[in-house]
Image (tube, rainbow, N blue to C red):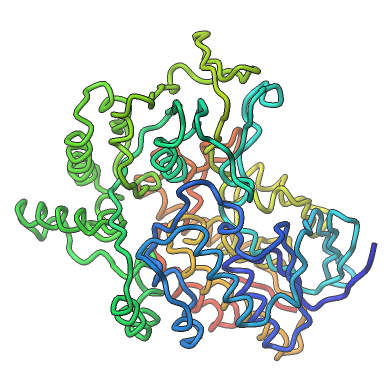
Length: 533
């Protein structure tokens, strides 16, 4: 056991943590990052499952604070895979010389605020303690896997693995009977990748998804030069769009003729990206009639590929609107179900009840015998990374207990009652779900660095949201969310995938640019809504 004293402690060494560490170190603070993983990368360290890749264009999923850092890395394709993304984050860590201030293979298990010293005492899984003034969480919005879900998992005679904890040595699937639980963005990537490797593939489907085809061209030198030449444009544009992508909503539905609308939908669909979701018509999130028309456009595209009526019923959504769940990109995913060795099993009305040594058992008693079970069962999004740490604020209040009753934050950056606890990827900010993550995480870490710099420059030591400030933000967040069709659906966007999780739209739905303006305005007004001492 050892004791360490810091000015700032950063939890996580992924996209947010690396940049946060760099910024605070540049301010002259004594700062250290801690990560459970053995290397940098965060999400892109853990998610090594077959087919894992970007669905944000690579050239926008980058740091924009340093032109040389941006241009010093070249992507091989529009949507590269996990190995290349992990290499990029290692390039960042090496270029900025960050490793000397990162402790790997170390899990933060407890953090307690001392009201006398106004500092945090942080404990690791090995029993080491760290005394720090600022505790900055960059633990990820999708980093707490939902893995222990079914009775009998420990009794399975084969191998069971969650996609977010895929072994670095891989999993031998050749000639095996494989079951995949889950068909969200991750499940789709896995399913379309392994279907031709396994002897038999059984996919257990609870909620069908509106999936869009991905167009993923390889990049040659001219392509790389072209996107690098856009650095200034991207740096200026991305932080101000609705979702932090390069494209944005431009036309109102009612301003176009039916023919013009159709042409716009076709063009965005053919783009082979998330553009149909994030830049076609904003009304898909608020107008049920528009939502239905665009949803039917996507359904028709899917029906034309699936052909089989039974598969259409199983794989095409009908009870929620396009875009109100996370929209996955796919590469030949639908056609996988035409293969003789692939079987889709509906489990919405006939759910999985247990896992036995031989395989998976459904409510009607049907048993599916398997050698490998892959759990693409998602995460306790937004909250899980922090509620799995015992965080104690003023009066020994527990963040896990508070969020177990009601999920509240101040701009997704702090929580009332927890002074000097600064958060990224937390609920009630776009980074909780509805954003190109690097765009939002850069903005949040910069805000946090500026806030700490403000305190240092003014001889202050503590920042905390006021109760009134937090209440006002939650009310503003909820007003926007309640007008959004996302709030009417059942998905991880509202915490529905986690038993007993309080229902609230996790992500700020007012747009990335608007959120940025709100946080900057608060700071420029002397951190309005926050108490500084």
